[in-house]
Image 1 (spheres, helix red, strand yellow):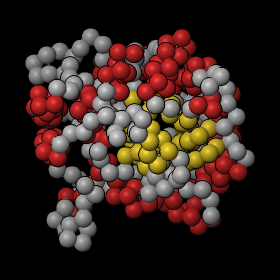
Image 2 (cartoon, helix red, strand yellow):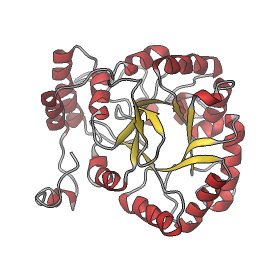
Image 3 (cartoon, one colour):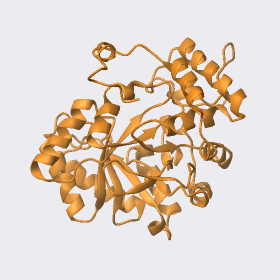
Image 4 (cartoon, one colour):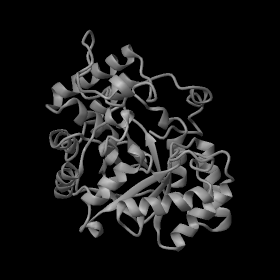
Length: 345
């Protein structure tokens, strides 16, 4: 049965994660960028977590760079007394502090970062520890050696990447395999009906190497809420007002084309636009979990309704066609050579 009670293995690991998980980037609102996402406090966070746990959602994702650590602090406080009921995922890479070593994933930085995250989260271990981005200035051997030491010390259960390119991910796996170190079992990626680049290279790599996708921003940076329409202004409450520039760019006409396809399916199913967009993702290969963000209980309840049912093959095909784009080279060329190089979908 599909639903929030469905659990999937995270890549090639033995860890089961819920098909839907909760992202705490809306916790804290510690600066102007994250205020556009949300400013959830501890009391509100407890209510959202209670709702998640009742639905079977037990994985909570954050990062030390979310609101300068405030997201981790609020999540840790809200989870106090129920740590053993949940899985915690956090990340490091982005700058915290003004020093020359206060960014990236060097051994010096990661040692400080993990101790700070553990303290803020009020825990002595992290279930899934992500490299939030690829650090091209630090040798991959240094990164992987540091991560394996965290696993050996019991501070980290599983390691993962986030926002890596194909060669970043494959090189990291190769170094880990060569030394017999724990390999990445997950990759936190941007993937949505208006952002399907993940399918070009990262999805085939994930299939081959058993890397589970943890999908962030599954509603296209707030574009697939059903509130953005032709000829209408942005809704008053939207992250796009203040945080659209650093996010994925989506041409207006392309977005409207995708929404048209979603509207057709919504009429057939009686489901909402966000529920359909999320259900489409649930059915994609390599997806282990979809990270939901929600400012309030109403949003969270609606998003939790994205599972427990399935789009038909015809409806999936309609959404595929409505969101199709010409991929970049060499991927468009590879689509002419599928006899011996089949597409992942």
